Image (cartoon, rainbow, N blue to C red; front, side, top):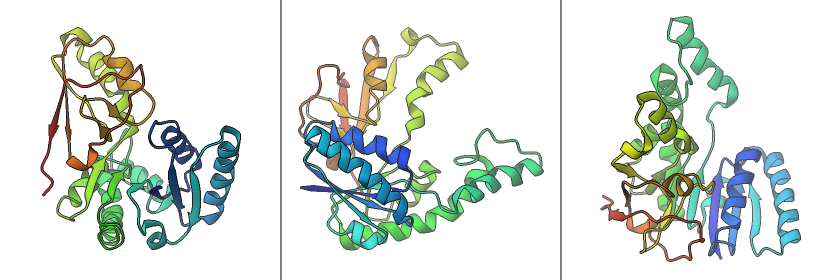
Length: 253
């Protein structure tokens, strides 16, 4: 069985949805999920819920719980990082301190002073995680949801770890930009489509909500995706999936 280790699995709502998306993806049903978090109580509750889902639908997946990051990483095929360093109190400070000095951020987890604060807390932890991945599961693909996503992924560029940055916020970005700029969908010439896994026909596995498939169903422009070789995998697409027109392979340095 393939092993997917989720580092920071204490976010019950997010991780529950993420795992359910994987379970309904053809070719990924036979998976062992290792749920790692500093709060064993939360992951234990999540595991109990997933075991009920497994029993109800006759699923093949296995679920493990640990508070030991090294144990979680041992032999993993995929590592998903989804944690918040400093907790909600630090997140609150990221917003309130800049606001005190006149910087009103829409959200303080990616850009502006709040994003810098968060990056300074998070990047050392992500580099420590990368070092353990190199040691314990060197062939694993790291799927990073930790913000500030771009800064975190940039810090891992020379880490020797295969990493892909993901963000559920991109699912509404196209519509928002179209409204802000007054550009109709029919006027867009090219869309760079993100994804986690791609097959040879250009079909993709993304976040699991089907946003891009719905958006692209009547899009007449060009679509392109850029992927590492580790993101290529043979799978059977669903009948509602929309392939991208061109998949370009990147060289991982």
